[in-house]
Amino acid sequence: MLRYILCICFITHLSTALSQPKHEIRAVWLTTAYGLDWPKTQSTSSVSMYKQQEEVKEILDKLKAAHINTVLLQTRIRGNLIYRSAYESISSVFTGKVNGDPGYDTLAFVLEECHKRGMECHAWIVVFPLGTDKHVKSLGKSSLTQKRPELCIPYRNEWFMNPGHPETKSYLLNLVNEVVKGYDIDGIHFDYFRYPEHTKNFPDTREFTRYGKGKNLDEWRRDNITSILRHIYKGVKAIKPWVKVSSSPVGKFQNTTRYSSNSWNAYNTVYQDVNTWLSEGLQDQLYPMMYFKGN
Image 1 (cartoon, rainbow, N blue to C red):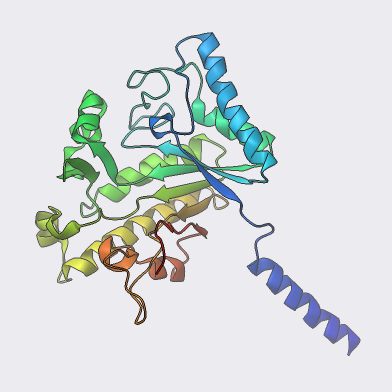
Image 2: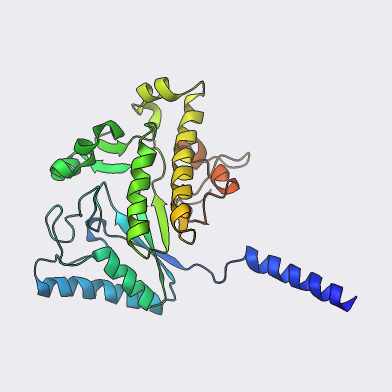
């Protein structure tokens, strides 16, 4: 009888251990867009390169002291990247020039510095927004709008990747796999994995007519987002099962009978069906965007 009880206790303990994380996640978004967090210095010489590197090391030291254990490093900004890629250009934030060479691999450097401090580093990927007309023009021939115009769609003076185009998922997986294969990354974190807000006039009628397959527009758009996430998640896990896949959806999933979301929720407004993502196991972590007051 004692042996049986011990066995049950072990199984219960094992089940609990497997269902719980080994430690809590204390994460921070480290922004590279516009150099908001980093870099403040442009790398144009060996001296300025060293200064740029010291800036991020100081940030990481402070995060370590604050007991942060996960850094979500902005790796894709707006159709541009922080590392040398076969698909998109390096952001000018590092050198002052589009696709300039800062003299070192910025992603590899931050990743190594995070690991030295016992912190995980996840590549934060801004998925669909490609930037304003001005930004897209500044990228010149390296802009996705010129290289793969069929995947891009203009809306409200900005450009977006088109979730309704069937080749969008393949392009995004190639981009993600470049990071997964090329770096000892701990996770892939998706931001803006959604349609833009106020999508009443979003110009995807052609794709909906061609690929809608009898669904209504809302269902089709939600399925587009989920299908792309499913494709990428499975693709990442096929290469490195230990790499964590996460996202930052809108913090309010849907209206409730008691509280309205005031037309700002994940499910109805930007077509993020997060319940399905979780029920299918397509997310290892979730970072809801709680950018609202009250209600």
